Image (cartoon, rainbow over all chains, first blue to last red):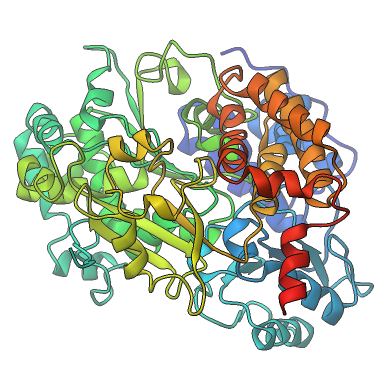
Length: 182
Length: 429
């Protein structure tokens, strides 16, 4: 498969050495370096919180493919954020199984407690709330949501209040309730 | 027959520390891989054929036949594990990855050996990040103990195990879109033929198998294909892990024998319809599949019986809806999902799901005219069977089946100014 020529390096580097190392390691895992595109974009987002258009050239150089190709990939997948979000991302599933068990009330409750509309970010930059998400695969614990990478199931108003409290107290990763991640 | 679970696939569920290599080995884990390595590829494939195992991702294609399409003597070959479970209502693969990750790896290695793959890629959907990281830890344990890498269990056969994270695209569960995504491209489906078995990942022969499909292999290797088949019926052999959600008392996953278990049994295992309510509708198979009603409760979980009723067991879900449910609203949510997830490659799907969604929102709000309802049916008729891949076809199946089963409910929304089901519920309250 023909690879595009590498782009010019950007003026100011956004990616840390650790991120570049992660991309390099990922490249070596696959029979074709291009396969490391998704892992590379995850590494970028883990470092920066989103995937800024300015980082495309650096990712492309690290993968040995064109910046436009990286851009094309990054814009296809819903979980790569083009703009900065809040420090924490709360995704509420509103697909059928969750909707049948009160997902809309979960969204309204969180909107009220956080003082933001669905899709918005709190003024202090702490939380982004989003309900346009794929089914989160937590239908057995509906209504369900994810706080960053942790799943919270059987969301009652008390659990939602506890989540908001923990986010504000800075202990967000200790998501309450069953189904919480490790 | 009273509802009962029959645990073959999930027999180690709940064993202490079974998510660690030590815990999984305590219950006999990786013995089946050793046995498989001694049996050789042809003998494994023969047992899988005898088991009658069919793909658990939704298409139900016989697993041994899928392997059998690989061209003789063409290497390298690849195995891809489809862990991109994204079907609305489906969460069984997540349960297997969370609770029995080493069993999945063992099944993956057995399949990789059977098809003589040099690499096995486990494609995990982006939303399952915690599960992906657990699998990565398990893969590291496997490498550290000689169960993966250059010389698996001292057999002389080598296989690299690579866990790959998706990033939020339902379409990547379609096997050729998964391959493009794994190659570092936008995840859009490829034209078939050539099928992945002939030209798949990096243009090489490739098998794509679902998580549950592969997690069955340790049992099949241990007990033999005939014993697995006998758990179910001749037409629907073995067991399946079903996900029951919605208006039930005890949502969750239940492993039941195929063919002899009915929807009523499955509903009973899940605690029945929630207290004080009656069944109105159910969706088997996941968000793509057609609606069934209370009249279908005694159907067995059998491929043909459900197909004859106009639906499918699909990816093994059952979403239960009681009498408070508005089928127009449910249809709207599913249509919105497909509109959001359409990859944009082909016109009927890209444009069709957009117009479907616009019309469903107007209908749900009681703003659509009877003419618009006819337009909706017309658009769906022009999508089904005319899209590049099944996503666009299935974006019409639930809504059209619900319209056929509940025509009055759909028509009552026309010009009503609001959802009549919700209005009725509020008046009764």
